[in-house]
Image (cartoon, rainbow, N blue to C red; front, side, top):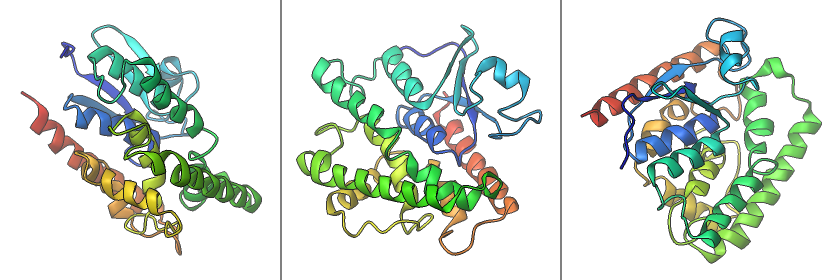
Amino acid sequence: MNHPSQRVILYGVPFSQPVRAVMWLLLYKRLPFDMVLVNPGSKGDSGSRNPTYLAKNPGGTIPTLEEPDTGFVLGEAHAILCYLSNKHGWDDVYPTQPQLRAKVDWYLHFHHRNLREASVGLVAPRIRKDLDIPQSTQQAARATVTNALQALDTGWLAQSRYLAGAQLTLADFAAYVEIGQLQSRFTNLFDFEPFPNVRRWLDEMQRIDGHDDIHVVLEDLGDISVAPPDMETIKNANKRALGVLKQRLADLSP
């Protein structure tokens, strides 16, 4: 396996769902990296709307990946997941066989206007009051997520152990950080009882190496279905998550 001479840098915060997907893959593959906190939506020194960060990622989104030894910078979680897999030959999670890879890509494209709504319409309204997301948008997001889960339950996960087949792939990492956050053990924002195959898959994913390390932030926040957490609670959850991540990364270092 090819390791860079310098550790890659991942910009973002542990609470971010796309950031967690990349964190999880890196931990699962035991590739050390450095985490740089970037506050989404902020124009401050460590904000995603700061000119310094925008020079790296003009979209102002997180995560962003940077390779210090080459200067290469890449935004968007799914692009990062695919790039890392291609670069390091992680063919188990991103198969080279065209049809198998196409099934992974199928889910990654499906994700954006479907399961991604879990964060936009269910989680964000309780975490980012400043966004003032209308009730109609939240209701539409819940309907979209419900329909997408139905598709997963009666389609993809009715036919195979994981989303793209018998083996764990990038599709599962990308999907779980969105779907899994809604479970009763975390934010408790969705009832999965009507979806037996999704529930089976959720249980399976919780046994994948790195799951607990990257979900510390959600464990700390806990149930937000009744009362949203204040900013201090969110900050402290991110800080503890970074502490756990730092310890895990120290264990990965040679």
